[in-house]
Length: 308
Image 1 (tube, helix red, strand yellow):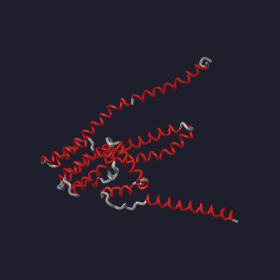
Image 2 (tube, helix red, strand yellow):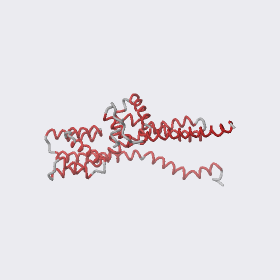
Image 3 (cartoon, helix red, strand yellow):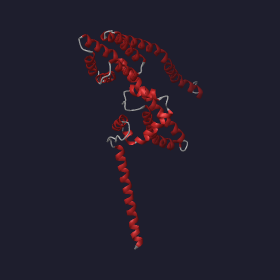
Image 4 (cartoon, helix red, strand yellow):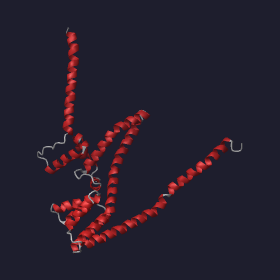
């Protein structure tokens, strides 16, 4: 009788404990993924606000916030020299300014770690135990590629900005020559280019000026945010001309013409390099063509069928 009762009770108790464990685990996951703001406590108010914004925009940050903060602290020490450049690339690529460089590296490391599971599974299934080495190498390669992707995004977005910047300067020139003030002209230009990165960046300049920054300080902030040699020289010339009292409409027209000349020179340089870059593919295509044409004759000669 006791044995029968124990046989019935133990599975029931085990099932109850397992159900409780699943319930607690689900509660922990739900709290981790919740986007409610954290309490301010004694922490720095802006940093807590920044973290709350990251929790809203990033699923990874919501789900793995303690781990990402630990990785960020490690990255702060391990990649101290690279953090300023990574931070510049984050801003130039148009990502949220709430990300810090060390947290962005932590995000890349966490993504590589999550990718490691299918990578290791496939490599071990294909190669057996030696696949562990290949899986580790491919995981590191995935992290490096995600890091390089940020740099490519920043370069491409800067290219788009430089491509449209002359047109925005032309629009500012026309509006100011028609009698608009700089603020109203900039507001209209940002609205016209609102779906383009150049409109987004100058929209931030306009927002900073509306919050009380001087025109020079807002343009300096744009220059530091993009940190591109060509844009730096243009913004620097505008700031210097404004300090010397040159009319802004004249400055904008001059800089727009300068950018068009630079773009023409850049296109001529790329066209001149195209011939050299096409040399290697052309040689490979010629070699492949020769092999396709002469291959059957060589095979027939080697097998003795050429004379038969």
